[in-house]
Image (tube, rainbow, N blue to C red; front, side, top):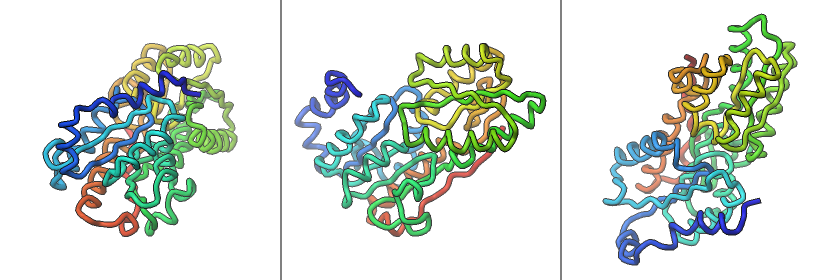
Length: 300
């Protein structure tokens, strides 16, 4: 559970803005940006979101304000953060990541929500269907959890003699964890592979995770889709190269930084699409009329 002092610090930024700044922002629409991770590592994604918002005619600080809420990995803080954005009557909530999307959905049935996540929003109960989301919510899915077994298959094709692999997960996100474990253990069983599950709840535990892979004599490492890992792609790739562990993860940045293979959707593209939808909703379109988009998948 999140400590009280840490929780208060997460919200303190919003409470200490000068009154003049708040008065200025009241004259323009406000987008609430809710993310379970921390800003570090997500700068390119946020820039992609703002760029598409700009192309829709909304420039931050000029004719739209963005109130950022970063939970810094504290999933328990998201409910209060989402409730705070609702209380501030933002025009749209851009909820990035599965925990953020679920928190926003639980907080309001009236304020439009644009989600960006890596799993199936229908299975999560966020929307009625991809083509007809219904209600006040729509967004973008990478469907990376559904693609995760393909990562295992690709690594097995590259390393056919390897029968023992490791899977990196983050137990701080129980919803995504359950999905990742279910699909990956099933895929490993089908391929006749032994799969060891290794946990890392923060970037401080990454090095120990790779040391565990070496100690287990695992011949390869699959990194499950997760908000924590998405914000530290280059660090994970560098560790894979240093420990000489063949590893696979989504995003071209992973392979470019030293990982063996990347496979999955481009997370920056997902944020771009979320920015487009946010702009369209600010112009008056309804989430119920905007089908859920799926970002394209590639391998490197």
